[in-house]
Length: 253
Image (cartoon, rainbow, N blue to C red):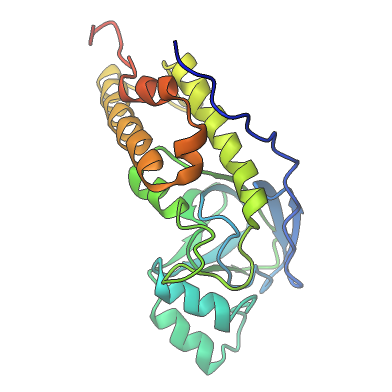
């Protein structure tokens, strides 16, 4: 039979994020709510973990700027950390915005997904209406996203942050959470493909499951090939299960 892997630490509760001096934040390290008035915002930063963020802009209007991953984001994080892009903009802020990968306007009700592992900043705009945005952080099964996540904590190179990166022990605790999620996925590998607003056609559900199968298999191999913590603690049967997820509908069987 399979030998038992080393015992993993159980994750401690995440530490709260430090709120900007302008925008008010509430929540934990992996979820929260930002509330602010006109020209308030979250200053430029790269998240402590290179995860993704899914958010819901509940009310008001907000500008969101993101920058390319790697050296460009690292340099901005070191030189312009916590800079709020409220008018009038400085020369350095204007130069930074010219190099942004995206600048988007979030409207009331908009839902968005973005990488927290790149430099990003927000600014509430429009009328005097209060802006409220809720978010949650996650690591997706997409191999590109998972590979970026593994750059968290790099000590040198284009992704190395001298300030703000999650300490190694806390990062390993977070990796424990991701291993738990992968094990649960293998135990119950039939995700519901549905939304609260509209029915999902069966053909679309089949296509999504096929993409998830491919991503899960590629990410399982990549995690163990590129990270010693996953290589040590991700059970072989979990790895094998991720390579052979039976995600199919009756039509696919």
